[in-house]
Amino acid sequence: MFSPKIVDGDLVIDENGDIVMVEGDEELAQSVRMILETRKGEFFLEPDHGLVFDNLLGKEADLAKAHEDIVEAVLQEERIASVEDVIFTDNPQERTRSVSLEMKKTDGGTLSLEGVNIEYA
Image (cartoon, rainbow, N blue to C red; front, side, top):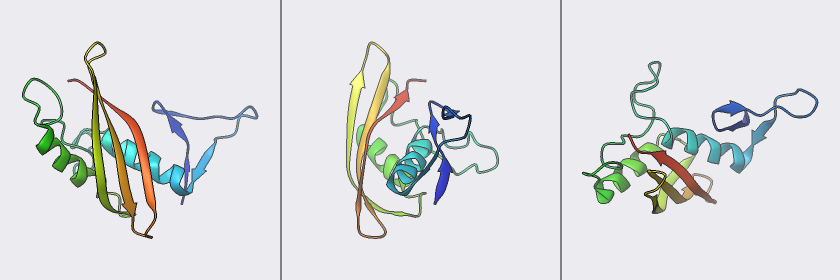
């Protein structure tokens, strides 16, 4: 699968003015990252796309429930068979929580994704 490369919400353009494309594991990791950075219900064309942030952020955060929410969100990507590990890292100064994942792909391979930043609401 080919997709335009997106960094910080922007298309990446090369020195020739062409859109940079990604494929393979890089494209799959980008797809999972975009799911995790999208609040569920935010995208009106696909209201079930994204992650529920309620258990992930704020004073009432419940990381056990957030783990379940992350697994549910990641499995929206049909090329991911399972989520093997979820690691939370907090940065109170920047009011962010980042998530790193180890996933098993449907083709039997593995995929790592590090440092997906989730901003506090």
